[in-house]
Image 1 (spheres, rainbow, N blue to C red):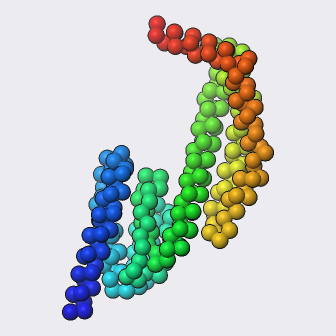
Image 2 (tube, one colour; image 1 turned 60 degrees about the vertical axis):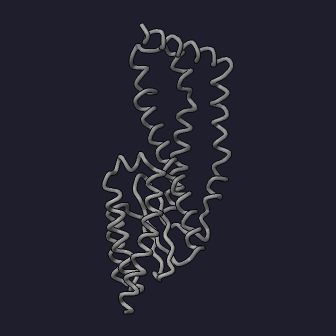
Length: 231
């Protein structure tokens, strides 16, 4: 009877978690279409997890969870001691669904902080990647062609763009260092941002250059480009 009771509690818990996951998928219809096997993977993972949880904390569960999550998305595994009154955090990271179980509400809040910082790092990494491509394929390549004049090139791509890219590259390096030895008790993220704040003022110079007297040149360049395309 005791075993049957545990099995029933597992089924009830599974139904509740499945409802939560279905809601998450409804909130992300694009991801659901792009990853048709996502629902199946969630179902298999939850079934296995909750079955093992129902029989108490287990090293077998930790090992299985570790293997599964590493295959799905490395460096996103945070596992606490598992008991029946566990909590689950469902989050989409880089189009991958990550399930995090914990018995501590405080730990779940700390994990949310971690994911917020992780999102900042991912955004900064993408920005540096795009800036690198912009400089390689446009800033450096266009002067070798006769597509635009030197004046237009100077308006579109002022010299500040190189400094901005280099600054964000160093900023990204500092953020990634924090992620290697991440400590929720002292993330140091605020310290890094404050150290780079003076350097971010170069964005103000860039914006000023895009306006008077450059705004008119900017406007006429795009108007001429649009006219050529329409013809």
